[in-house]
Length: 256
Image (tube, rainbow, N blue to C red; front, side, top):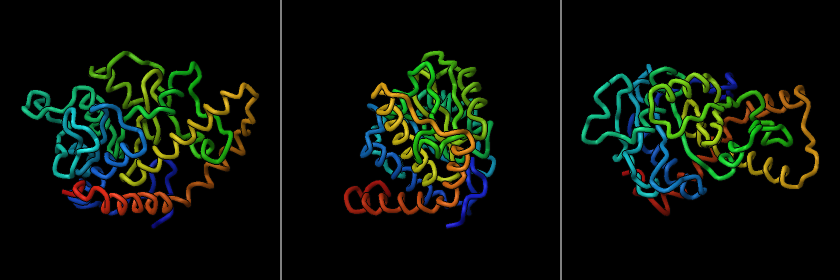
């Protein structure tokens, strides 16, 4: 696996076939359940299939992540104004966030939006910034956008535009009073970002809970540490491949 050269998104890989992308995205939904990142039948993951990012795959409305198969994923066009009037319209908040981001930012090939426990708890703090206090937290130094403009359920066009603009070209958007959105070039990279951000949030929250002063790294050390993570992009692919093999043994229908 090639080394990442762009710290925000990674090297542009060869485009997967639509079926391969469907299988990876379906695997991500199943894994979100295993890791406790899912919530009821809400939240949504998407992945672009067109070069301009406007045509993308996303989970159908109110389908539990544990049941999603590759063939269940909706193929949507972010530029199609009739999508929400169709019989199989996606969840309004999903369309608001994912449709807007894929339309506005072709580099955001994959977008995960969810409410994992630790990242969401961090998002409720007055200062939700990810403090660099260890390797995992420092991994995200300079790579987290923070949106403190919470306006309720994200189902209005203006909310979608603000989210897309705030995310910009960073891999993580911490959404104040809400949750987290993860952007990447591939499903494997998005999965690894989410995995490590949730771990980092857990570490930071546990450190806060001690009531003791945090040993926050200097900006120079944090930036150095974040940069040292960049050559490890292949680790994320190996990690995701392991979990797909695990799913192939326990839940092979995700590929259907």
